[in-house]
Amino acid sequence: MKAAWYERNGKAREVLVAGETETPRPGVGEVLVRLSTSGVNPSDVKSRAGRPLAFPRIVPHSDGAGVIEAVGDGVDKARIGERVWTWNGQWKRPFGTAAEFIALPSAQAVRLPDNVDFDAGACLGIPALTALHAVELHGDIAGRTLLVTGAAAAVGDYAVQIAKLRGAQVIGTASATRADHAKAAGADHVIDYKTENVAERVREITGGRGVDAVIDMDLSSTAALLSEGVLAPHGKMVCYGSNVPGDIPISFPAMLWGSLTLQVFVVYELLPEERKRAVGELNRLLQAGALRHSIGATFPLAEIAAAHETVENGRITGNVVLKID
Image 1 (cartoon, one colour):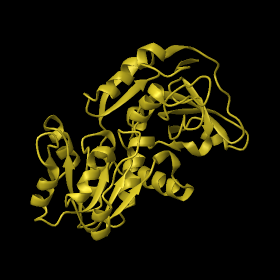
Image 2 (cartoon, rainbow, N blue to C red):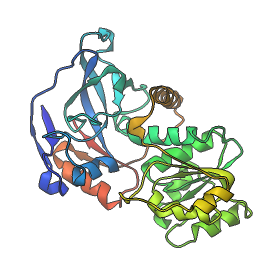
Image 3 (cartoon, helix red, strand yellow):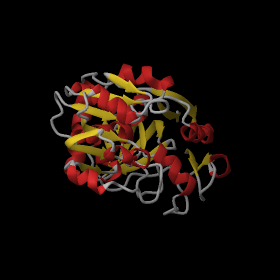
């Protein structure tokens, strides 16, 4: 089969190789998916660039979509021919979705509703599930005010949409060139974090009170907001990422006297019951046609290095997808 891989860390064009490799076979409890698309996420890029390799060869990417071609023992043969999207394709495994085929546990290939195309299917495992779980961690947000940082980014886009569907007022941060994208997702207010003081604008919009909740993409650049009155007393920040790999200082006095909560999670490690709930709810939204999917750029498999570079330079609004077929 055709696939792309790397055997050492480094720059995309220096370490990524596209070529032929052995087609996997589904083991017990597994399905073999013929992939049509593969999603390229920031975590895939960071892993290739510098995270120590856990295996001699890595076929990257966890997200993808395609059709089940074969099943292993213990899996209903009726699944053959089913359109699916994948999650955790390359998490703690050597071979991900940057290939014509992937064999993985049956539960990690989720039925893709007929009204959702394969490009969108490659955006679900990390961006959409992260957004959904982040909103879920805030509980009932109907009538509450929510700040979404990076509201025009892949996760932020979905988070804004889901929060609006659940009745929240949403304030988003985005650059001036991406403000319209965040508004199209449903953001009631958009703050240009490059030219405006985010804390001042939040207090202005909320009448000095602050927001009830925050969904944050980069704690390294937003931790200071906790001591700047962005969160109302007893508010909660849910964070799913940081652009700095080391420790991040947090103001304990601000957390203490505001009775604030900071919760951090990584979508790869959701508890089984959390995963089941999130996958079920996401597919319900997909079947209802309730979500829009933003594809910023597509590349053929042979141009995987360009796809990684596109994610790294951050100039594209929307998800980056590899076309496998």
